[in-house]
Structure formats: structure tokens, C-alpha cells
Amino acid sequence: MSEKSLRPPWGSFLRNTLLIVVLLGMLYAAFNLRLPSVEELQSRIEAYGWAGWLAFVLLYAVVAMTPIPVTIMAVSGGVIFGVLEGSLLSVIGVLVGCWAAYHLARALGTEAVRRLLGSHAETVETHLEDTGFQAVCALRLMPGVPYWPVNYGSGAFGVSQRDFVVASVISTVPGQVSLVALGAFIAEPSVTYGLVVGVAWTVVIAMTVWAYRSWRGTSRRPFPGA
Figure 1 (cartoon, helix red, strand yellow):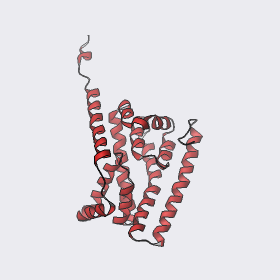
Figure 2: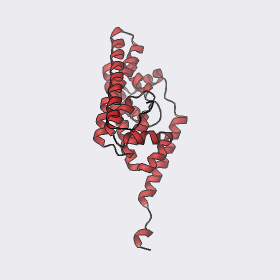
Figure 3: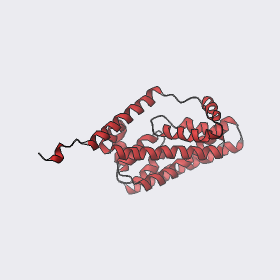
Figure 4: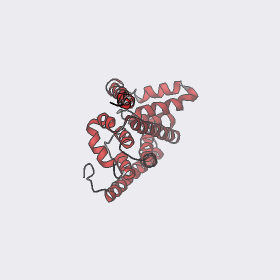
């Protein structure tokens, strides 16, 4: 037996350890953590004063890395900061979280991410492995598809960082703006905010159709719901 084969498989050990830590963190977040209401979150963010925007971005990034829905964060951004600043901070926060999850998936490795994704693994891998850019756009825009499986799946199943980042920016901005505008409308109902919500959702629907058709044109695999 060679000396090399006697060495402990440190890479595998570290990946498995990281997987366990991530799984435990996600399970804890999914079953024990509860995002505060919009009013509570607003009060907490405002308590940070000038650093409230940084606290909001960091919290949003953490939420985007977990199975916790990001909707309340975007709506809270509109309530707390208004449409323009809230949209900017929400987009930054969610993209930072998506990017961090993408690189965490690369560190974990393909097999570990398959276990992490569970029931989402087959669907995400099937649609990402051949047409990364179009699939990331389509999956981001599809109603009911969480952010986190797309983030981890993209890192594990070969989507390039460039395709992942560009597709995420293109497909994330309209949805975030629509949710932020909804929060701003709730805080201060106005025709302007209502128009922003309507326009943003029109863009989301149009982009969903575009991404779906583009993906269908580059892959022969059936898309979810097709």
C-alpha cells in the first residue's frame, strides 16, 4: 500500500464537515427562525441609524442563502427605505446572498449539494447542466421556485460564474422592484407606487415568457409545468 493511500482524505473530510454544518444551519433556520413582521423589522433596522442600510443588506444576504422566503425582506425594504433606495438595497442584498451560496456550493462539491437540495436536486440539475444562462433566468422568474436551490445548484452543476451573475442580475431586478414597490405602496398608498408595481410585474411576466422560450430553444428537456 502506497504512502499516498495512507494519508487521511482531508478534502473529503472537510467537505463532509462543511455539508453537515450547512445542513444543520438550514434546518435550524427553516424550523426555528422566524423573520419579524414588517413593523418589527422596520423598528430594528431604524435603531441602527445610519448603519441601517448595511444591516438590511447583510440580513437579506443571509436570508437569500437559506430556504427562508425572501419576499418579506423585499417588501420591508419598500416600507423602510422607499422604492428607489429599497430597490437598490434589496437587489444588492439578494445578489450577495446568491453569490455567496453559489461559491459555498462549489466548496461543498456536486455530491454534497445533491444531498443538500434533496427533492429539488433532480429538477435543478436537469435544467442547469446544459443551458445555464437561460435556465437560471427561467428558474429565477418561475413562480413558486425558491432562490436557494438555484443558487446552490448553479455552483455545483457547472454554471459559470459569469452566466450565473449576469442571469441573476437580469432576472432578479424586476421581481425585487415589484416587491419593494408593493411595500412602499402599503406604507404610503399612491398612484405612482401602484404604477411601479404594475409595470414591474408586467416586466416580470414578459421576461418569464422570454426566458422560457429561450430555454426551450436551447434544450430538449421538458421544463417544469410544460
